[in-house]
Length: 111
Image (tube, rainbow, N blue to C red; front, top):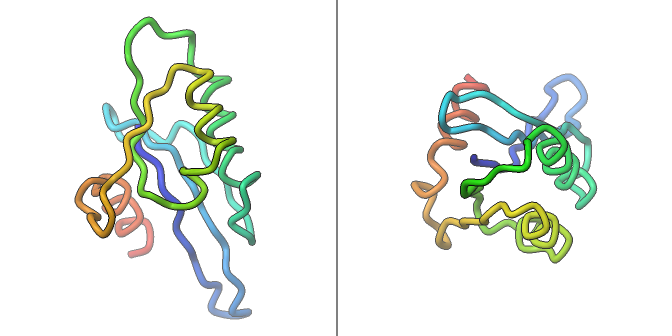
């Protein structure tokens, strides 16, 4: 799994809209997502909670790759992952290649 937050600017109003999808790297399917006008903690936890509801109790290791954004380092996010036996893998600072799957998805989406 992989996740990140991206920002879209609405040309007509100048407002910003944020998107956070959780992508299954096995088949490039978006399993859960959240859209908001503000990148709050609740916005970040929404797709994670959707994912937890969808996933069966797995006997094998599930890993989610993210960047080092504040929302992924927050105690509530880490607690939710730990409670659901999802391993968190963060990219190193200033290393977009570790999360290249999401960066590529956002690039295609914005083009």
